[in-house]
Amino acid sequence: MIQVTDKAKEKLAVLRLEEGRTENHNVRVSVKGGGCSGLMYDLGFDDTIKPADQVFEDKGIKILVDKKSLLYLLGTTLDFSDGLNGKGFQFINPNASRTCGCGESFAV
Image 1 (cartoon, rainbow, N blue to C red):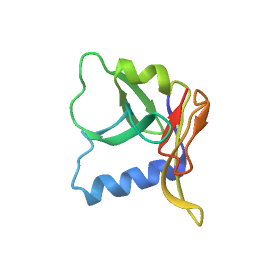
Image 2 (cartoon, helix red, strand yellow):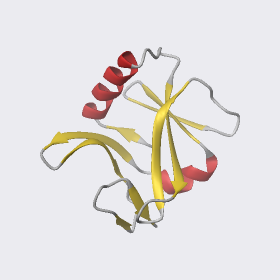
Image 3 (tube, rainbow, N blue to C red):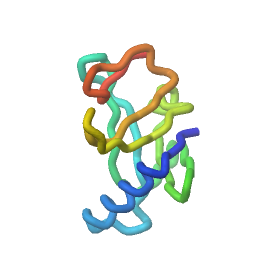
Image 4 (cartoon, rainbow, N blue to C red):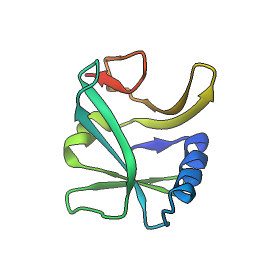
């Protein structure tokens, strides 16, 4: 399961409106190769649920994850920070053995 904090939920709602997305646009989270630690998170809106997708819902937010990415993301919490140490979405991933300084890439 992937969880969403209240701050992340609020920011996703704002972004959905700003980008002209509808309630049919769910949040897609995936993992791709790259970044300074080897793997990178990818986050965006998607209105298509593919047959192989796993669908999670937390706080009214539907999250789509492909099977390959699911192995890396189980138990992850999506958060949003707007503090002095950086602004943006953060992935609190218990599967990551290390993360880079920017928080956008990780290793297992």
